[in-house]
Length: 338
Image (cartoon, rainbow, N blue to C red; front, side, top):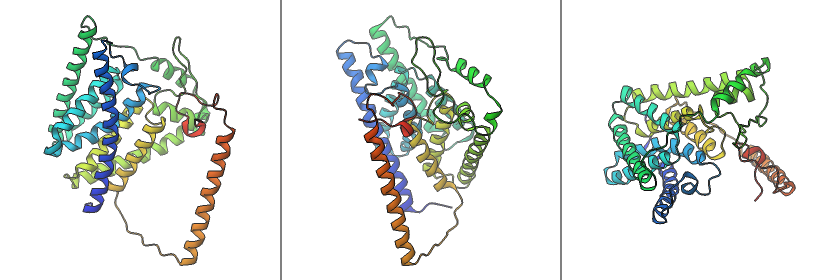
């Protein structure tokens, strides 16, 4: 199965649009770095990642975008631009001390070096961009301090939370879990956490072990089909980039909230859908509807959307702007009134 030219262009345009939007955000953060240097202020994550409630929200998007950005190394005309943005991404990762993101990239890098000879060189080049980003981070560090790079070796409370959640597992977790949006954990001197920062533990805790098995099976089938497809279509670099992006998101979700935060969650599922669409075996199904059935379907569809819009508007009007919103992963269920 090989994708036709029109479908290839649609996928390429979509990925290019994602990277363009992300690159604009990266440039804004880079401007904050420059402004910090000019003002002789140490470029702390909270200064560089302005307007982000949590800097990890940006790191979660980075880890999904970087494999897609690496894909564009195949185009020689823009290769230097790709080098530039890869380096900036890694610089921002180092500034934000995103150890989970670095671990995820390291795993993907080792995967390509061991099993993917077609992408091996591109990821070696990307590793070079990572080291350049590290050197820039070191330069910024010695510019404003003694030259020692601070290294955080703690788990940020994750191990304690994981042990606590696992110790409280009951037989209920095998079937229905505790339900979504009920998790709360607090650590001394830190804001409360509304998710355990691990996709496996969270799914079992909230939805039950059976739901985890079903979801894991769907992920396994997706990756298995993608690997089989790519062994036959080795030149399909777009599908390979989507696979690495999807796999990166899954790995990072073991340590972060990729799977529950609104933007990263949406992007992860879009990438998953694109990967399925490009790598699954397809059977053409021709459906024919009579005109009257199409009209009935259109009426039902419009009525459902009208009802949804009415409920959403009523909910919005009754929301208290001062309450009901938390800095956590419940945006889709709690929302935020502006």
